[in-house]
Image (cartoon, rainbow, N blue to C red; front, side, top):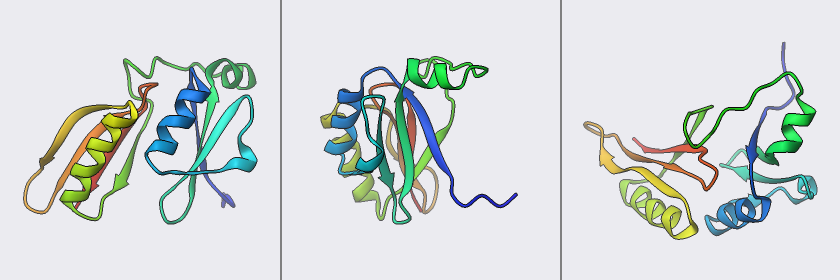
Length: 131
């Protein structure tokens, strides 16, 4: 198997809240793919796409799939690379200002490793990491 592309689809409760959160953090909207059922953003230098679908829309389209409670469990954790420890600290502040939750505050994980974990308003987890 050699896919042409890969992207992620996550379930959310409120598209407007999701749109505002990721826009406030400075992520580039993937507007041709946004609609009344999803908002979409590019992540990183290679424009990895994450679509945020209304939960009921994605559940209806993927009939055999069960979606857990992202507030209580982890479906996946994306890692975002920071250029420096200072940038990770700045991002932690931006996440909280935008309405996210810092789950574990920025800290060192041994020589040369630094980062933190946050959740967006729907509970989707992201690990910010500098090494």
